[in-house]
Amino acid sequence: MDPVTARLTVSDACLALAGSLRGTSPKDALAVAGRLRREGHEPGLVAAAMSLAELRREARPRLGDAVDGMVLHRAGLEQASRAVVSALHAERFADAGCRAVADLTAGLGADAMAFAARGLGVVAFEADEATAILAAHNVSPWPHARVIHGDSLALLDEADVDGVFADPARRNARGRRHDPSDYSPPLDAVLDLSRRYRALGVKAGPGLPHEAVPPGFEAQWVSVDGDVVEVGLWAGAAARREGHGALVIRGEERHEIAGPTDRAPAGPLGGWLLEPDGAVIRAGLVGVLADGLGAHLVDPSIAYLTMDAPPSATPFARAYRVLERLPLDVKVLARELRAREVGTVDIKKRGVDLTPEQLRPRLKLKGSARATLVLTRLEGRHAALLVEPV
Image (cartoon, rainbow, N blue to C red; front, side, top):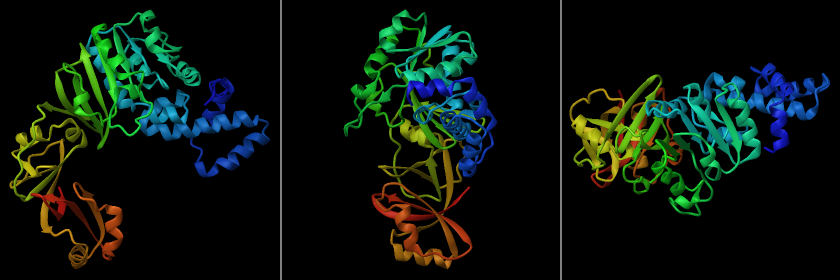
């Protein structure tokens, strides 16, 4: 989005028109656009208002009802933190006793809004002019929050803050798994701010390798309703512990696990299979979970756990009862599933090259029953497990 379009988007006329379009179905977009133009609205205004209304509709599951007062563009929405996660970021700084926070990478202002809503002073920086215009509108309900268009690291010293937050963008990985120089602003420069401020928080992608976590920082991987959305790097008063942790959010419930990243032992398949939450896996805490449940890995290189007794209820893993172990052979699987009159199969995989999209049509299933199939390795050999979710 260019600055001219951004200014049009935040205009009273566009905001009013977009608000009137709430509830409009996407399939009616062409008809509605034609009607608005016939009513005398300028084509540019109609396009901006309809785009905003569409983005608000798409953003509602991620950002909640706050979207009704927000202005958005698609690139910013794709990068914005979910409302529940932004609230957790704000909670960190509030609990750290901060009075004001600098957001070095404001984007559309989702995190800055959460900080301001907690009563924290906010100075949010955004390098892109058009995005800064939108972010300034989004934080405008809070007089103690402001957005500055410019280079955050160059301007940070002018901000009167005691906490710093950043969600650095990856510029170009160029085939590398991880390189701090690929971040904007540079990740190393952001992490060095931990020496100057009371509290520091950095949002990074969940694929951040463990060796990239600085000594003395807390690294917490976060999943929301099964999706791993980030790893937060926390330092100073914002850190609650040193080392790795996982936060699992399901609905209104929050559950945390932390500890050493030692691997769990492996052993034979038992009567129950457990699929750890992605945040637990990314954090390297499968061993901690296994120790707490009395479980072990099905294979040294596979993050499935198994045990003989029914597992205790845990928010950190999905449990399945093992019905049958089968060879990973398409003909055998098709025969066994047809014998059970299975017409719909849910396929999970870990540690095998065959994908659900490749396997499902080859099974040629017909029937009314539904089954769950797990493709994996057991003690170094490929296998398929017919399991029942519990």
